[in-house]
Image 1 (cartoon, rainbow, N blue to C red):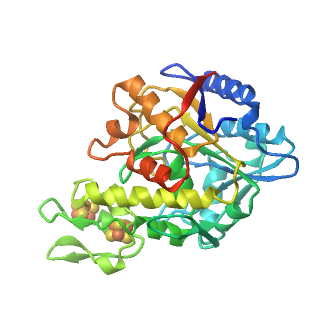
Image 2 (image 1 turned 60 degrees about the horizontal axis):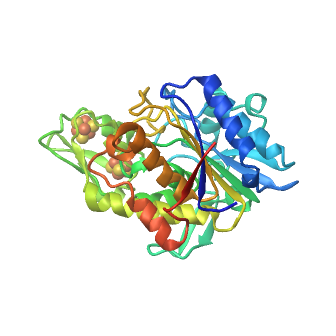
Length: 357
Ligand code: SF4
Ligand code: SF4
């Protein structure tokens, strides 16, 4: 398969489960050259099971179709994910797996076992060498490195730190170990705007590092303790937590792109990237809230190039909405930084040929 091709199966603007399932089946059946896995290979199927109250993540019935497709090559798929830095339903393997099963990602529903890629506490990893410009070594979840192949099932959304969270984000942040995640977030250096802070204490409660304390009746962030996880930005309802979106978002995006390369560099020709352009929300699926889509449904994109599939995501959502998903969600951020950097280090190409199925 030409690596610059992005195969695209459209759906209507408010698609339902049947239309989505049919489009995904059509896409998978139409691009046999994307089925790069061979008999006996262990194939990691990277998914996101959503946070508590999230209803817009990619559902088990679609994941089951991907699993069946991998099995049709007599390969051996397993679902996989990593623990989050922030406190929530997915911050270690036990709570993450319990939450996944509660959301229907069982063997019975998907046809594949679920294996946490980064172990019990999120720190099981392998150091991977990459031709990066920020890092020459990145910290990737061990079981993903050991897998023979990978298919990343990504759900594009807006992202408060990156503008767009899609395939590159799913690979970079989603497949790195806890250390890897902290390295990526280290570019974030939040501060509290005292004038806006009501001292509701929400950020103190949620900060995973106890880096936020009371000072003169306001929240105050102790920089030395902060890992840059962004949780305080997410939970503050008063927009009192600020960081330098311009430069820090760019650093975050570049670091995520380098970790994404680390997740796939050991599997040349054995990685497939599927973006589900449905139920696209302004914030990512890590938010423990119910969100409504900000853009009409578009369809499914499949490629052997993670950069091309994300560029196609921006282009297709721009066509559907006049502004792409990233700029619709976070107009201050430039979501193409991650793609330009990914291209510069050799992860993929922003130029592609769209093949409509
Ligand atoms: S969540 Fe926001 S308003 Fe509440 S204490 Fe923290 S910074 Fe202040
Ligand atoms: S202060 Fe730092 S560690 Fe704590 S929630 Fe905010 S970004 Fe995360």
